[in-house]
Structures are given as C-alpha cells and as structure tokens.
Length: 503
Figure 1 (cartoon, rainbow, N blue to C red):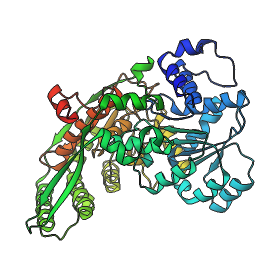
Figure 2 (figure 1 turned 45 degrees about the horizontal axis):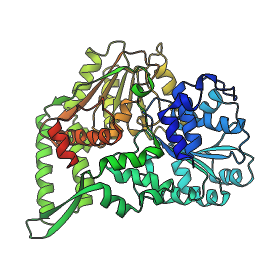
Figure 3 (figure 1 turned 135 degrees about the vertical axis):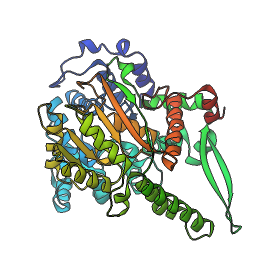
Figure 4 (figure 1 turned 30 degrees about the vertical axis):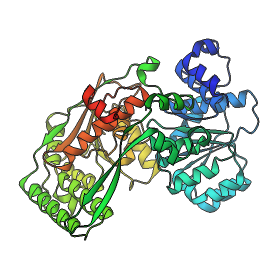
C-alpha cells in the first residue's frame, strides 16, 4: 500500500498528477479537480477512509476509481458495494451517469434470487444494503471478493456490533477497502479505531485497549443510590496525545470540506428556537421525571429502562401529548411549525425532521385538517423505492406543488434535498456529526439558495437544553482532531476548549 504516495497526492495534487491533462479513460461526465485528486488517493491508498463533507461527491470519486482501474486493465476489478437501502438506486444511477462500466447488479430481490446471483451470476459490481449483508454474509465470504466499498461506514463504528464483526471478517484478506463517511468519528476516537480495525490497520494502531489508553481520557464517576448501592460509570472526556493521533491517522483518511476544494456553498444560519411547553406537557413531564428518579433510586429501574422508558418518553412529551398516546393534541412545537408554514414559508420549500414517527402522523393530520396538501412523508415505513424516488423527484422540481417533506432518520442519509431553504428540527439528533450530516442534505453544490436556515426547536427547562449544550462539546472535539470549523455549532472559547481537551 502506497500510503506515502497517497499522502503526497493529498498534499501536492498538481505536482504529482497533472489533472488538467488527464487522459480520457471513459468517463461520461468530467470530474472536478478535487474529485480526480480523491480518485488517485483511493487508488494509491487502497485501504482508506474517504471522509469528505456531505455533498462533495464521494460516490462519483468511487465510481471513477472503478472506471480508471478498468481502463488500465487492472485484474480482478470486481466489487461489492454496501450502502444504506435509501441510496441503492442513487449509486446505480451514478454508474450510468459517470461511467461506461457494466450495469451493477442490485441485491434487492428475494434471498433465493440473490444467492443464485452470488454463485452463478456474471457480474462485476454488486450493490446491496447493510441488512442484506447481515443476512447473506456467509455466502459472500465464500465468494472471496477482494474489493469492497462501505458507504456511510459509521454503521459499524461500534466494535462489537454484528455488522462490525461481519465487515472485519469479509475484509480481512481484501485488496481494496474504501469506507465512505462524512462522520468517521462521532462520539470519541474509539469510533475511528473501529473503522481502522476493519481496514486491517491494527498493526499501526494496536488493540482497542492500547488505543484507548494512549489517546483517550476517560473519567470514572462513582454513584450512590438512596438504598446504599454503589456503581461506577466511565465517560470519555478528552483526547490525549492529540497531535500524535492526528499525524498517525492522516495517511489513511482523506477529509476535505468545501473551503478546502474551493467550492461555494450556501451559508448556514442556525437559529435555536426555545419554547415553553404547555401546562399539560409540563405537568406530564414533571410527573414522569419524579417517577423515574424514585424508581431508579429504589433499584426498580435499570440503565436500559432509563433510556428506553424514561429518556425517550420525556423527549416525546417535549414534542406533544399525542406522541405518548393521548387523544388530546397539546404541542408547543407543532403549534410553532404550523404558524411557520401558514405565515412565513411562502413559496419556499421546507424539510421537517423528527426522530419519532408519531410526530409525522400528528403533524400530517394537522396539515390535512388545515387544508394543506402540499406535503409528503419520508419514513422507514415508506418502504416502496418507487414512492421515495417520486417524492425526491417532485421535491427537487421547483415547479412541483410539493413544498414540504416530513421525515425521520430516513431523510438523514444518502438523499439530496437541496431544493429546501428551511430545515425545522422537532428533535435534536443525539450526535453532533449526524446533525451536521442532516444539514448537508440541504446544503449542497447546486442549491438555488444563498442561505440555508435551520431551526432546532428546544423546550425550556428540559433535557433538550442539556443535550444541545453537550452537542457543542462533541462538535468542538471533532473540529479539533480534523482541523475543521463547524458551521452548525458556535465556536467554543479557549477556556471551554481547554476543559474539553484536558491538555
């Protein structure tokens, strides 16, 4: 692996390759210079993480690599691409748009048909979802495919998940492994170690235990319940040997933002909107909080129950009473959304994000009752690929009457919705980088807007306020390691940053 050469390509792209004189190698559409640079980095590094910001064309860089290897006659140019289910058709369309390569086989049919394709199909490229990978990995292991792409690789950022263990087995003897993700580290450097481990980089970074001891500052806290029982929790609080870690990961990661490549994007204006819950919501919230604390102190509620029964129920109450199964519809957030749509939206397009499907249904009913029909939903329940593609097509068409999309996490990954000017977040995403990724669905090259406006809705005096503050620290940690500057969260002061980094 020519990581030294890959590093030179990243540092001195035009001295290493004359991109402006790149020979014709069969691409249908011209690549931008930074995308050609990325393609050559992937070619030289072979096993690496492509971590460009959302919207810089990670898919185009990957398929251009396939075309280049085919043009050069590189043997065994057979690939399996593992992607989120919502992006399978997008990847297939990128093949058709950019390359003259054979049409990829889509692993979206029944298992019997898929297995027949694995064993007897004459294919060069196969695209499948992570769910299919989990079901069919034993068949794929026997194929001994040497080239892999994992889009949105943060799906296996945790070491001991089923997906992570499967990926590590499949890529153990691979020649090329590309992990494409704009968020290689979401919570702490151990996320990054999981990706590097799947690349087979243990000899550079060591085991998880050694990596943690070397680079992570952990804080152990002692807790005591009212009944006298004691327990401890361990929390990541900062990075140790930060400069060394930055230097060490650099050969394996290509991460660029729009400013790095000279591309102009719409500005982002983030306007957190703090709301006071209705009396009905406040009463329910306070009662539940007291009940959870009492049950936990008495030993009747575990940590898992605190998360599933307590935390999520409290967040749902912040959204409204219908979210927790009540007939009455009391929601200060949905009141604010309806006011925005009826009085401020005008002819612009709007994306509304929520973590909970109950909010999608309740808001849809409110809009319908108000005579507003220019909206569509985009959730995991909308499983038809034809429906999803139709919604995206109509939303991107400026002449279409579809002005509003209400979606869950299904809108956060792999779809482009740059027709929208506004994003309203009914729920905060519990990860700073995933929140940035959501904003990236709107803030893309080709947007017709000069400014994207984001409205996170936050209820006062609740856990949402604490969560929003913690997201600032997570974002600052990521920016410090990758020399970036978040457009979503304000910059921390020197004192705050010093406290975070513990250095």
